[in-house]
Each structure stands twice: as C-alpha cells, then as structure tokens.
Amino acid sequence: MDSIRVVGNGPLNGRIPVAGAKNACLALMPAALLTEDPLVLTNAPRLSDIETMTLLLESLGAQVSVADQSRTLTLCAQDITNTKAHYDIVRKMRASVLVLGPLLARTGTARVSLPGGCAIGARPVNLHLQGLEALGARLELRNGYIDARAPNGLRGSRINFPLVSVGATENLMLAAVLAQGTTVLENAALEPEIVDLADCLRAMGARIAGDGSAVIEIEGVDRLRGTRHQVIADRIEMGTYMMAPAIAGGDVELIGGRRDLVESLCDKLEATGVVVETTDDGLRVSRVNSRIRSVNVVTEPFPGFPTDLQAQMMALMTTADDRSVLTETIFENRFMHAQELLRMGADIRVQGGTATVTGVDHLKGAPVMATDIRASVSLILAGLAARGETIISRVYHLDRGYERLEEKLSACGAIIERLNG
Ligand code: UD1
Image (cartoon, rainbow, N blue to C red; front, side, top):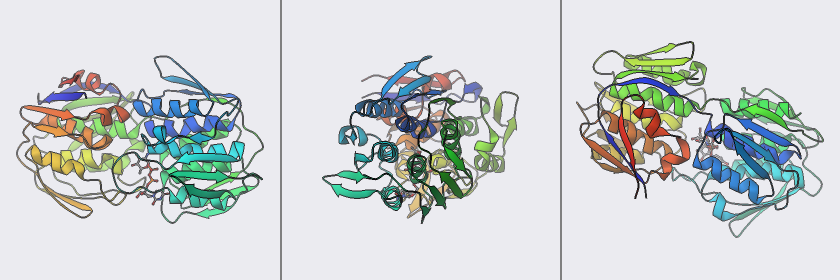
C-alpha cells in the first residue's frame, strides 16, 4: 500500500489550480441515467471516487468515455441494461446510492446495495428512502439491498426533511425531475453542489426553482435531453489548500478559487490573522505574522463551516497561540485524526462532539495513519508544518478526494513524495 512522506520545509509559495468538485461530479454523473442522450461533464476531477462512479454507471449499461486527460466525461445511458447496483461497487463509496433516484425515475425499478464508505459515523440513508416513498416508490430492504419499485411511475409530493442532507436532497431532485406533477423539497440542503446539479438538470430540460434556498420546487417533465455542463470548483479542495500557507507560512494563490464558496472558512482564517484576498485568477492566502490566533469552530450545513474542513482546521489549530474548541455537529465520529495528531505532539482533548485543542510551539514528524479522506489530508497539512519527517500510510483515502496532491504542494516548495509499497 502506498504511503506519503512529508518533511516540514518552511513557508509555501506558489500557485495551486483548484480542481472540479468531487461531490458535485458524483451527483452530476448519475443524472446521465435520466436521458438517452449523452451528458458531457467538463472540469471533472481525476479521482478514484469518479472512477468508482464510472464503473457503477457502466455496470448499469451506460457508456462512459473520457477525454482531455480525464477532465471531460461523456456519459450515455441510451439503454439501461441492468438496474442492480452491486455491493462490490457501492461499498467503496456511499455516493453510489445516488443512482437510486434516477434509476427509479427512468425505469420504475432499482436494486441498490446499502452503502459503506468513510468510517465517520453511522451515516444512514433513511431520508433518501423516506423521500422516495413519498414520491410513491415501494421499498423493501432485502439481503443488504434496497429493492425499489414504482410500476406506475413516481408522483410529485411535498417532502419536509427532518434534517438537512446533501445526498437526500440530490437523490430526490434526481428522481423528481421525471415524476408526474410537482415536488416540493422543504429543509433542502443549500450547498453549492446542489445548485450545480440543478443548473445541469435545467440545461437537460428539467423545471427546478429555489435551489440554493431551503425550499426547492420541481415540476416533473416527460423526458430530459443531454447537455454539456462544467463541474463547479471544489470548495473543499480549495479550503484545504488555503490552510496550507496558514499552517506552514507563506503565500499561495488558488487559481479558480472563489470566496463565495468558502466564506465561512475565510472568516475563520481572517480571525486567525491570515490574509485572504480576491485576485484576478482566484484567491490568495498569506500568513504574515509568526503565530496564528486560536479560533473556535462549529461545523454546520452550508453556508456554515463545512464538516469536510474540520480535520484540516484542527491541524491548523494545533500550533495556534491559545486554546480552541472545535464542535462537530454533522457526523458523530469524525475526530479520528485527533489520535494521529497527538502522535505528532499536538495537545487535543476529545469529549463527545467537541475537541479542545491547545496550541503547541511546534509539531514533530511521526508515522501516522489515514482514516478517511479529510483526516488524511489534515495529517499532510500537519506534516508540512512539523519538524522532521511524517509518513502517512493508507493514502488510498487521499486518492479518493485529492488529485495530484504531491505535485500541487511540491510546486509551492513542499517536500512531499509518494512511496510505493
Ligand atoms: C455529503 C458529502 C460529504 C459531506 C456531507 C456533509 C458527497 C458525496 N458527500 O455527504 O463529503 O461531509 O455531505 O456536508 O457529497 N443523514 C441521515 N439520514 C440520511 C442521510 C443523512 O440521518 O438519509 C445524516 C448523516 O448521518 C449526517 C447528516 O445527515 O449526520 C448529513 O449528511 P448528508 O448531508 O446526507 O451527507 P452526505 O450527502 O452523505
């Protein structure tokens, strides 16, 4: 299994291009199941999760071709030859469950394995299932599979989500666009990836309004057509690299960066003393003072502070000037990185959903283990600021969410390499 070696090497200076958003792309790709025509997605990120979704769609009969160094995906589901999403694929990635809505809407039947994915809490799919039932689907759980049927098609309905779920909002959008009548999603997720999906579906002929607000209204249509759509920038990748100069010092410009996608992070970084500026090409982040100030963070649905940046923020707080409290409200078991940061000399106390981090003078390199996508990158960030060598094992987690990470950071002066083994 590959590992990554990082040696703390002082400030980072340079430019980092922001990739297309993994989470947006994973919701856009299943939209191809809704039409016989080709759906072309540009600015796709080159990640193993995208390959997993490609394999899943191919297993359902879609044809997927890649061009432009895998940045452009052409997906064509002219014939859906299979409606079963197999456990072997779904277990690798939770987002696989997003084929359920479109499969049901297009064919009236779907059999999707219950997902696995990152080990960050229970992560049920009950909201996806309840929503689809409200649209008239009949569901049964059998042998680890969700058996779904809608022999007479789906019917629009009013669905009030008891809690905000990005995935359930997406699955319901992907189903409701071909349902008969109007669907209203209340307490819908506001994430930019939802708006990106709505933009793409609209270009395919769907009638959607209110995306980006808590109430989304979808009027079902009989058929959708293909389109060409550019995947939105990855705000989590962007935010992660914004924290690199914050923790190691230096001055980094994120090409394609957009403040509106990471406003909550910008506010926190500015409160630590880091400077964030909008430039012609994106966002520039620089750390001018020698030590950053501690800040408290509470994770929340968008536009609040993203749970997917909590681990990276914890790494940053390990060398801040005082004490900070990080509160995780989205996933109950998302502090696995704390144990690994302790191995690097951090002072962190975890109690339930809060972690209290007391800044230390410096971190020390150590062998550490990645446990999920964002935990692994927090260890890379810590390694960039630590004295000595950090070896991060189980980097397949990293490859799910960060393309060419070593290349992007080395270009800014980091000492980072992949060790094959
Ligand atoms: C998506 C993102 C993930 C991010 C998360 C929260 C993708 C592929 N992944 O995951 O990176 O961390 O949003 O921003 O886009 N829940 C239920 N029942 C459900 C669904 C969710 O109880 O049916 C709970 C979850 O356990 C969690 C909360 O709702 O506590 C939010 O989860 P959700 O927004 O659905 O996350 P994902 O869509 O899985």
